[in-house]
Structure formats: structure tokens, C-alpha cells
Image 1 (cartoon, helix red, strand yellow):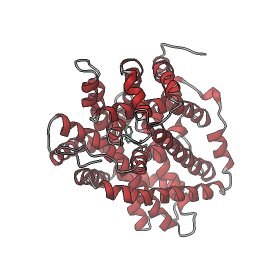
Image 2 (cartoon, protein in one colour; image 1 turned 135 degrees about the horizontal axis):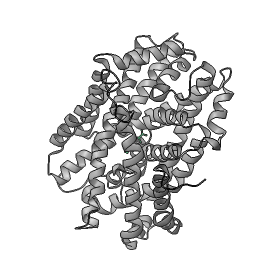
Image 3 (cartoon, protein in one colour; image 1 turned 180 degrees about the vertical axis):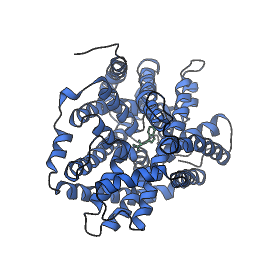
Image 4 (tube, protein in one colour; image 1 turned 60 degrees about the vertical axis):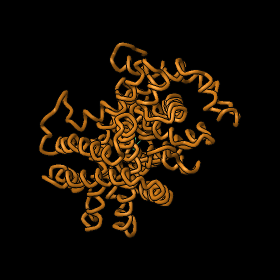
Length: 455
Ligand code: TRP
């Protein structure tokens, strides 16, 4: 997907390659780190229930819409809207996406850096034999460390940039094909270990038995935000990736594979983490450190714990990098296609500017942690702003655009590959993008602002 220059635009070479790259973007820290921690803070089962409803009714139509916009125009998000709606302000969605990409990379790469630290700690054997309190203390002293979290951030950012510059699409495809199934198997092992701990049942109840009295406007907004974040939708990542999908691939099918696998991985991560939280004496609502204080203990309760632990954290880093490249690619494709920059220069400029905000984000959990706005540090602000506001807002405009402004002919030809394939989903898709999804997103916004009340 990467090497895009003169003449022929690059594309994924196979249908499987497209699914692997898009699932690679979707599946990442959002599933294994963020889903459990946000679920934990928002009451468990009821959150999961709403999350699943949003994934199907909003996530799928937004994803297909992004593919359609990208593939029909063969452009980055900004260029795509300029081409489809010349002289209209829709291109602002593309610009908001570029801004969101900066923000997301800043905090996401921060967390990706933590996975490298935990990989390193596994290699040196420092994670073994520690209980809940020690792991909690270890996590917070790491965040406070004067240079380690910064160093890991920069290393991760640099690796992401290298992949984007060299466009090692084949390399990435080859490795992820092998490594992601491995991560999945490791997660299943963790699930088994976690479920066989004494007291694990409470965790399952927490995740799967919805307590609807816990639903608040905040819970609903967080579920929507997590859905967008996890599926990589709402900021044009999948417009960009959609533009690399071959004309003969089936968009609806790609979207359903990606959504299914993304959701499966999130739920499995939840089943690995919550039983352990309850059995080992932590709190489900312990915030962004949840995974890092719970999983090392479970990993070390497996035979050869250290090996599983280092494998787990390095594979998680790989899952994270297939996501960070998809975010950086949005900025780079914009600079290359709209500002006529060579790919390398675009990557360097994007990486350096993201790193400035990123280092501040890392600091906001350490030396700058007393600096807060509305009770949130920079890390929290960027996360909240992107996941809960910018992405759903982007998604709202995207479905309004495809549902009400884009020509039916384009929708139809993209959904059916110019009549090559039959699809029964076109009418369903139309109802979703014209009515259900935009109304639902708008209601969530109004509801969380306190303007709309249901019960
Ligand atoms: N979805 C990824 C994850 O769950 C993160 C991600 C990649 C993303 N690209 C994105 C999130 C675009 C929002 C928008 O880890």
C-alpha cells in the first residue's frame, strides 16, 4: 500500500492482504489495552451490550462508507472529498482526520512504548513473582521515570516511520500473517489460565451480566467512542486504506471479516483480564494501567511464564505497530498527495511533529501530571477528544455524506463492483447510512450533553 509515486497507484496485492492490513489497523491496543480498561470503568456488561449494538448498527455502515469514498476516488480523505464534492466544505472532514491522526498517535504510541518496556522487563526477568501491589507500584514508578517512557515512545515512533518510509508492505503482510494468529493463541492461553483462577466467575459476571442501572450518558458516549476507536473509523484511516483495495474485492465482505475479528479479539481480551482482576484482587476500574498490572501476574502463573510474558508483550507491540502505521499513513498520504511532498520528507515531518506532542503526552503521566484541564491530563484529553468526540463526529458526517450526498450510482457500483457481484445488503446499507446511524450518533451526542433525555 505504501510506495505510492509516479503513475500507477499502489494497492493491496490480494484480498487476503487487504483484510490482513485493515484488520491489522483495527486490531491493536484498542482491543487489548483500551477495551478492558474502558469497560472496567464503565460498569462492565451493560457497556459491552451497548458497545455491540453500536458496532453493528453504526460501525459497519461507517466502515463501508469509508471504503466506498476511498476506493471510488483513489485518494487520501481530504483529496477524496474535494473530488466528490468540489467547492463544498466536506473536505473539512479530511482535515479533521489529519488532526485526529496527530492526537491519536501521541497517546497511542505512548502506550505502545509501555509494551516495549514490559517486553524489556520480561527479558530481564523483572516481572516474575510479583503480586498485584508490586506490579501497580512498578507501573507508576515507570511512568514517573525521567527518561525510559520517553525513550520507548521515540523508539516506537521511529519504527513506525521506518515502515512507512520503506513501504515494506510485503514484509508487514508476511510477518503479520504469522504473528497475529500467534498473539491470538497466546490470548486464548491467557483466557484459560485466567478462568481457572479461584474466584474467576465474578469477572465473567462483571463482563457478561449487564446491570442496566449502570447506564449513564457517559457510559453510552464511551461505548460509541470505543467502537469508533477500535474499528479505526471516523478519521479517514479506512478511506486511505479503502483506496488501496482492489476493484474486484468485495467491500461488504471485507468489512464483515474485519468487524468480526476486531470484536472477537476485544471480547477475548476482556475474558482474559476480568476474571483475573477479580481473582487476584485488583479493581476493574483502575484506569489505563489495568492491563499492565493484571496480565504480568497471569502470564507468570503459566508454566514458563517468563517466555510467555516476553512473547505476549512483543506480539502486542507488533499489533500496535500495524495500527500506528495506519494512522501515520493518513498524515503522510495527505502531505504526499496534497502538498506534493516526497514520501520520505512527508514521513519525517509528520514523525517529528507528532513526537513533539507525543513527548508532552508521555510527560503528562509523569513530571507534568499535576497539569490538568477539567480534571484530565494531556493524555486523557487527547484520548477523550479523539475517541469520544472527533471520531464519532467524523463518522456522523461520513454517513451523512454517503447517505444523502454521494450519488446512488457510485454507492451501487462500489457495493456491487460495477455489477460483478450480487449484494443483498445495498438496501440495508442505505437505511443504515441515511437514517439509523446518523440519528443514533446524533442522539448519543445530544444525550451526553444533557440536551436529550430518554428515561
Ligand atoms: N483501531 C486501532 C486499535 O484498536 C487503533 C487505530 C488505528 C485507530 N487506526 C485508527 C483508531 C484510526 C482510530 C482511528 O488499536
